[in-house]
Image 1 (cartoon, rainbow, N blue to C red):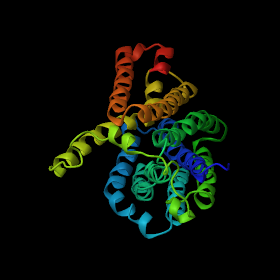
Image 2: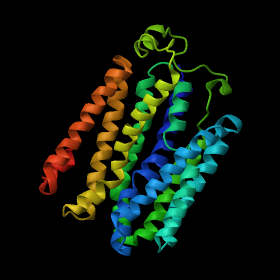
Image 3: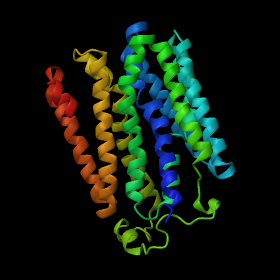
Length: 319
């Protein structure tokens, strides 16, 4: 029996997620530290780069997502990835903050439908069975590649300087993503004359356990939308701390290598959490799994806060 093509799609999603979120987003913290040290910027000055990029992503996402329905997937994602990589590489030319802020807006436009959403959309189309595991594994690639690339970027910065290192990182990201997009990824299994993995199995029981009673007939959609915005905002707020872990480690007296390793530890936790919690979601339900995840993340923040400026190095790694 030949394996279902959905598993090859999953491999493509892993490469895509690793090159986009894993490198273009999760490795920025190491470069922030090197740039601030070299050019004398404050951490808050560089943090504004991520803020501008995120605001533009939020404003343009409803429009750029429509491109996936109107144009071929490989065209849209290839153009977006090329533009985002060029914006990252262009940092090598800058000396003044204003250029970072300008390119942050352009990067936000290119990346608005690039991080996480295409992978989740593709996996949901291709996997009806073991969906939680597949989503978790593909999204965990951002942590895996981030954990590997943060020390690599640190070494590249020490060997080549941060300007050439940022160009190399953009090139590696493109080398991972563009072939996967062109050769592997497809939005719908029907485009290949196939059915989703597990489509022939009966799913009503599995679907019902992830949908609380009353959801389908809920009569207050604006209340639901408001609650979703609040919950997603809180979740995304916590995710922004990845970019600051390296700078945080440096602020309590550690060098660049330790700073990169702290970020890598966060990425390792990211990998384990997404795969394990994805598998748990298939067994439990989304709601119980989400509460478990929030409890774990909350505990980590309490450990970091309680440790203060004298936090033990290994406790910091663990948290």
